[in-house]
Image 1 (tube, rainbow, N blue to C red):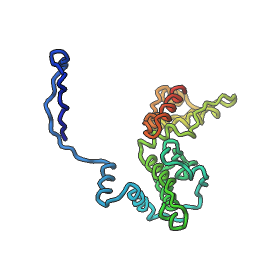
Image 2: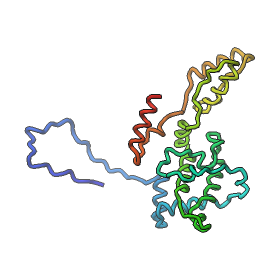
Image 3: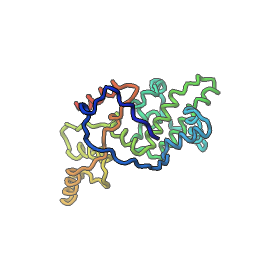
Image 4: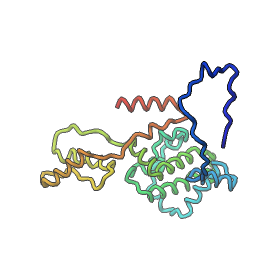
Length: 251
């Protein structure tokens, strides 16, 4: 794809305003090959003449083919506040709670997430709600799809897990058994380690070698935790983005 440069205005005087800082490189013709999940999604919509919403529904229906109804036995309660969430504020939603995994959170496996998603789709698919006489409101369905997108993408899930609002970052200030008080803190932070296995605090019976290994590991702790989830600007609310950045820098 090429574009012509705009016409030089008649008022421009090369002797007064021209200053060369370098030269243009030669043009290079390259072949571009469309790849990636977003291109495939675009091609799928074009091929079937689907809208974005119809495409999402079709993909969701394919996910629920092998759902076992017994999976509903331990389903988490859905609060009215959760069901009324605005899908536009997806950055503010608890993705685990939306899928009914608020207790498992970062411990949830990929299979747990897929099964939870299937259950939610089976229950909240707009077509199913409409057939049962309910208002065909797909807002919460969109929240479900966004949560599934985030939690099944390894990079996006790590970004969300890094800022999970239910993460306990507090350090105990109580007196008592040092190992019982601070052992859980190291266990909690161990999940952010790029290196495994992670040596734990141990106890009074730990050997000198175990103690040295523990201190050497944690003094050079290599963490994958980041705060990129906040850094991505939300086009719907620039003000929210700026406030989050300010609050985060203060912390």
